[in-house]
Length: 307
Image 1: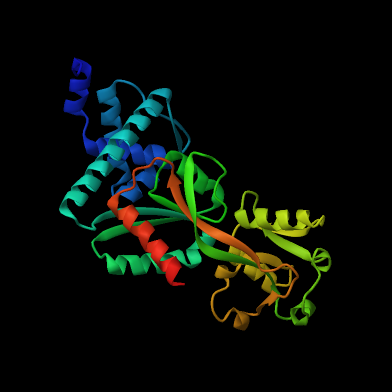
Image 2: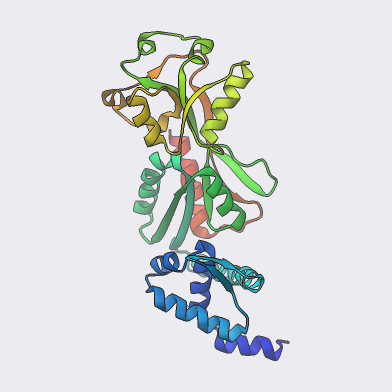
């Protein structure tokens, strides 16, 4: 039986207030929460104050423009997430009862996957126009944080985390190639020795990047050390640095696109390359996927088998 306290909270706290609170806590920003929910910043602040009044405890601490959850706020955040997960399951069950492919798909991918995921997602939404899809593109570190918080339905990543908490399967080949400017002397050579490439100045991704891990591991396996010239946080920045003559790099072939040779870039013919890596798709182990997420997963499998 519900206690009087629970009943009182249920009468006074609105779902909208919980939505505002959850977004503010997840984004650590009232401004960003207002933008996500299409509300004004004063409205978000007012809803949080009302919620704190109903709870009778402070939920946020503010230092300058940054906000963080109090211990009380942490408890309410976990509860709010559970409530919205329940609503998601209800939506899924209603959709299944109706036999409809409608609802929302939340997909998060690492930055390199942005070169092919929008096209796949576009095909899927064309086949199922009743589905609303959101795509979060971020680096590997932030993606792992989102996975730990179970913020999305499915994730696409090159190297899945080695943990029993997650369930991933291979989705698409991800060939890693050595790239340099087309004007580089090595661009005209064949079967270049890896030891020779190791002497070249390298431009690599930031720490935590899956591409960086693949590159370093490959050279260490051959007892070679990279001559790191520069670290950059995006594939586009790396390509521009290559064109600027700052060095060479290893990139996923998906980042190059069609007609890349006309851009001044060239794939170098290095022994052992391309490295055949895989894209993986997955989710938290034990997660009950919505009918929409299951449909998208089957769509990915069918697309892969067609290639």
